[in-house]
Length: 78
Image (cartoon, rainbow, N blue to C red; front, top):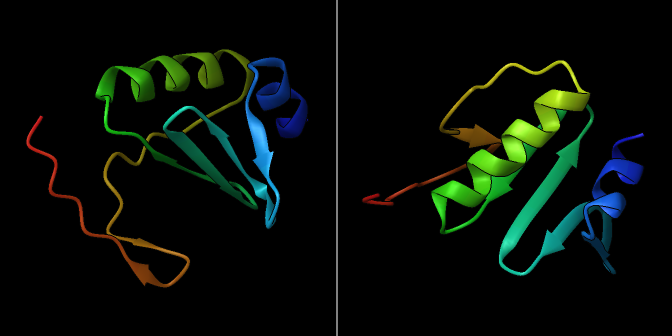
């Protein structure tokens, strides 16, 4: 279901991990029931969150501190 959602929005799966989708610079990693979004443009992330929330029940956790036992450092000044 999530795969079809991203394919319909013209995202492509990366070759080495079919749970990671990309479109231009926006990267989406899906792991079980978590979605990790990476993009320099905050508006692109907000637009995707709106589209996702129209199809799926979501809880917005905002900024990640850890993801899959990796420490995530975010230093965006936007």
